[in-house]
Amino acid sequence: MFAPVYLDYNATTPLDPAVREAMLPWFRDRFGNASSRHEYGRAARKAIDEARGQVAAAVNAHPTEVIFTSGGSEANNLFLKGAAATMRPGLVVVSAIEHPCVREPARQLLKSGWRLEEIRVDGAGRINPQAFEGLLAEKPRLVSVMLANNETGVIQNVAALAAGVRARGGWMHCDAVQALGKMKVDFRALGVHGLTLSSHKIYGPIGAGALIVDKRVELAPLVAGGGQERNLRSGTENVMAIVGFGKACELAAAQVEERALHLAGLRQRLEAGLRQMDARIFSVDALRLPNTSFFAIPGVDGDTLVGKLDRAGFAVASGSACSSANPEPSHTLLAMGVESSLARAAVRMSLGSASTQQDVDGFLTALGENLASLRTLTAMTV
Image (cartoon, rainbow, N blue to C red):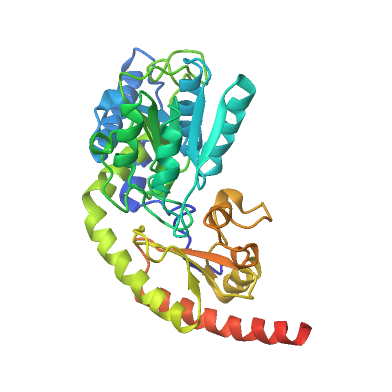
């Protein structure tokens, strides 16, 4: 079967062989319900407890602060909706570049009497300090700002933002789904009340994630029932996915510096080649994740280019995988003040642990060849 070179690691990652090995017993002879009192149940509970410790250790949290979910989207919804359900309606603030699984639940709170404001960003995708301070003066009850953007890779100074929110009595949440495994993530140092993680972004299985919650924070559950996960997420635990998530977190924490160096070197090589093709690289002057490059070739449609690159043997994206069905240009780029026509040309390339110099060089060659044909076609139709 034809398999394109995979360069879309921000969308999802392949399962690490060590993670697969950790999960295999739970596909075969281990199948107990972690709530059961017999040996099968106790073995499942022990496996979940071990994974909870691995996840906690990866982000400098306590195991009792780890709430397992089905992924990042559920974790984000749990914090925003769960926190809002325990408060009188007030102001909820999110950044203008948040993932849809933060923006949409925040918008849903409007039906319950909440007000919603977005924090503006600058042309590089960084939080505008003056805009943030202006919103803090209104004493928001809930604030959510992602640690690293899924499209541009831009890293926010969440610790400084969280200090301001705490000083005014608000609760601060951070979506760290893209950051984990690519940079150091420290729950304590960030000073947030809630932190979202996802397994399939760090070479773990799809279907597992976590919300790290400060013990002083009260949340209402999204799913009521048997009282699993501190009464915050009822339902029989997906043991095999949780075990894989735990192992992936252990590996991510141990390998983060090595991975970051490898990825940064490849991105430097990639972007040097992109500049020779007159590409516009977004957020190039901001602090970014080492694996992410979001760029555009003026006058060349991003979706069309992605399709041609796929047929040439390279799998990249035109933006967020969760928004790929939306024909509108990237909301992140629009929030940054990028013109709609240029935003429609955007292509995201995200590298991973298996990426090589040969992958990057092959991609640049394919890109150059396809640009030549696309420009010829454009010239003929003008």
